[in-house]
Length: 166
Image 1 (cartoon, helix red, strand yellow):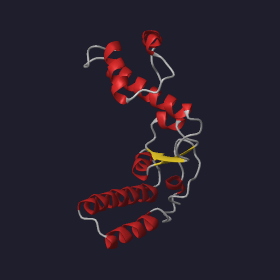
Image 2 (cartoon, rainbow, N blue to C red):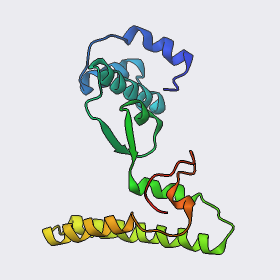
Image 3 (cartoon, rainbow, N blue to C red):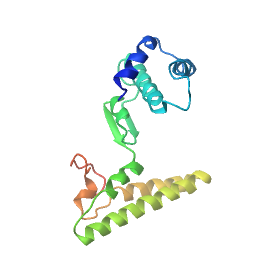
Image 4 (cartoon, helix red, strand yellow):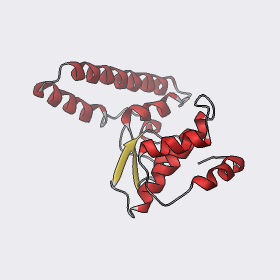
């Protein structure tokens, strides 16, 4: 989890196979790092490692698929990881096509993603069955459209092509 060797040595006396509550872990972290304003990154890494260990102690992951952002710690939780659609948009912003039309496709798609996101926020304030159906249908249309720019259908990091935009 990126914890330095020095911090790993300091942590050794606190390690056990016992599954602890969050309060118990926080108490141990306070013993390890008495100043709450310092070592925040190390505290977070230890919490994430403890959560991963708890999942793995129970054998197979408690869920077959996890939809989340692209944080590396989630890749260790389950065999099948899906990228949340709102986080997927970050990768489209990194695309730098040479052809003007492809740049326009990216702008169009990103605009549609953000418009849809704002509609979801509005729905959250006033949900209704009719709006739920409309948004669900709009999602299907949005994520099955064909733009003519193949990089919108691929992941810039791995060059594979998931079926989102073609």
